[in-house]
Amino acid sequence: MINSLSARSGARQWLIAFAFILLATVPVLAGSLNLVYEQVIKDSWGNEIGYRSTRLNSPNDLPVGSAWRNYLNLKLPDGKTVFEYARDTSAYLAQPLKLKLSDRNQTAYTEKTYNGYDLNLYNYINSFSSDSSKTFLFLHEFGHVAMLNGYPSSYRFSGLDYGDDNKHYLDEILPNENTAWVEGWANAFAAQKNGGMVFSFNLNSSTTLAFLQSNSFGEMARNELFVAKVLYDSFGAISSGRDKVFNAISRSGPHSSLRDFCNKFVLLYPDDKVALARILVNNSHGNISLNDILNYVNGGSRTVSRALYDYLAQVGLVAATSGTTGTPTNTRPTTTTTNTSSTSFWGRIASWFSGLFGRAQSAFANAPAPSASVEPSVSVPATGATPPGGATAPEIPGTQTNEFDSVNDLARAQELYYQAFAEYNRLMAESGGDRQKILKAQQRMQQAKERVKQLRRQMR
Image (cartoon, rainbow, N blue to C red; front, side, top):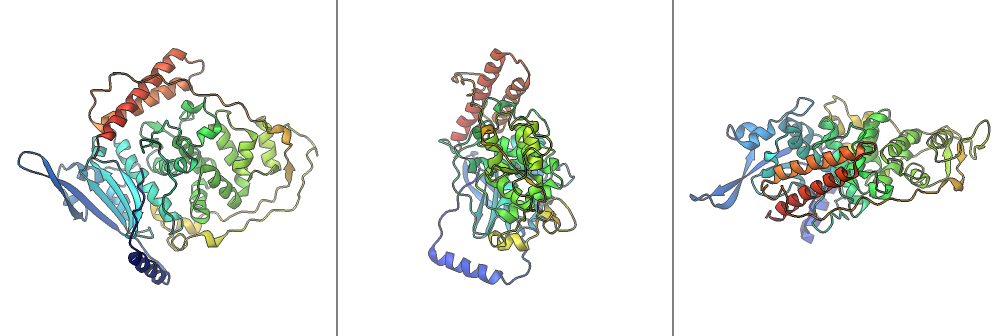
């Protein structure tokens, strides 16, 4: 979850703007890690009376057995601990990173301030039984930092809408595509450092999005797990995909949606249109239309490359042609230029992606350069643009008194929700699944989520 930056005084804004002008003359600016522990203070009766913030240099500054010391020493799949990853990657950020570990009963969030990036983790995280869930939460929030760092320095999270409860859940269709994009990116970023895991969901599985099969493609694009899966698959299914995706983040951001990102990505890498289209088709459960594909990977134009036309024919979205049928409308190579004015000062100088994945050299510098397509183009007939009818999801039964009402630990409640969600998704993925079992699993998932919502509302 992301909180918006509060307003500052006009004088302070002027001073900061002046400082940025001065910093623009510095050839290289590295970030740093500011590690803070916010400890709860209790009276002799055990009542909370306040909080005390302490600057830490390492996990060893915390007592042996401390939950936060154990957390910082959790190992990621690449062998680094959470602390080592935060320490090493912060050096590649354009601004300082403040990592706060707090005993408060609140929800984790990330924001950008005039002092740098603030990543705030709270006590409930330590109650998760799975280490991968614990590390995912840190990496998800760091994914927000990565987006802030890659986008222009003026960018702040804005236009986000999490609905009436101001919270987001993996199974939800969010109110707008921008919110799904921001949270989906953070999920994908975290998953590629967390063995593919988003809590109990493995993005390496082809059935991860089975729960969305009854939704329209437009609704899918407003689900954060769908956005995450498309991005995560792009890392591996496209040649040098991870570097290209990160390069597109820095070169063409900010982005307002997955569609906006895809369009800007293929402007940089037009020869990857087919690969990206294939990822979208594979994850859409057949609910993507020809118009959707063209809007995502071809800027809405009905003039496509021969390779893209052949792929669209392969999946039945256009009529197959043979020989010279479908004469190219433009045989000249297309060229691509990069608008460097949209690239932030920080994006140009930081070269920070190298540190995120432990490479010795800059991934920003080594990312594949924008390419120029040399393929002839083909005109797609308008008659192939009929979108399929959108089916609605099964009705959600109302929640009543249930097995989850006695669960009072937020982390445990979240784990039960993810487990119930995974079981519902598994049943949806089964061919010819039992309708009654699916509805019962869906009801159980909604009841588990409702308990999470109740516990979150009790947070201060």
